[in-house]
Image (cartoon, rainbow, N blue to C red; front, side, top):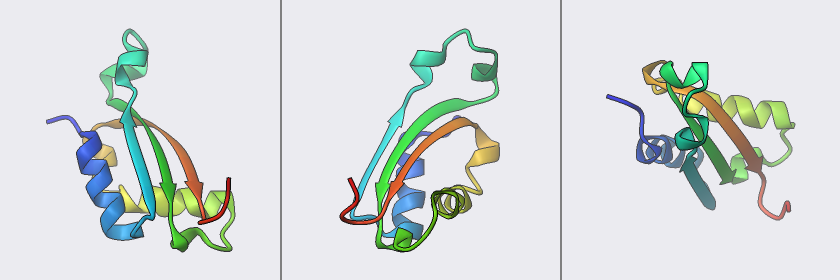
Length: 88
């Protein structure tokens, strides 16, 4: 069973308690791409207090840690926009 945007959203809501969260399945944009056979492509925009004072790398690590169980089940690519409240 392929990973869904809803599963990603649930995992991120549970671990990051986001103020704003948008998860988009971009797989249709990558049809024919070699990696498309290995899993789906997603974009995530998340705003969370958990990101306050953290570097971009640390924020991305938190997102990847939150999705640890889903990644091997079919996430090939993940575009992450992780912000603290008040950042534009």
